[in-house]
Length: 107
Image (tube, rainbow, N blue to C red; front, side, top):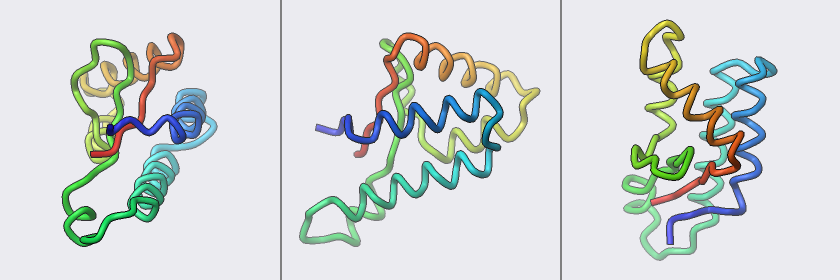
């Protein structure tokens, strides 16, 4: 299973801090990448190089969200706050936090 329930509270906290302007986009992305690296390190597989190149951390912000939003997509979408994609993503994050439906996945 790809769901990483252990990392969900950390992601919830990071996204909440970002929405509250307590951290900036660079800090958010850096900490999400740290989570991804930790998941890579935690994974117990024989061929680590293949896993590192193919598996990634992604997020499902709310029930029915089938976008599988990656860290790179978050960084791209939020880098221009006036772009419609940024507004849509921010609404999805806020809704996911409000309804407690945010999920962290790794696959």
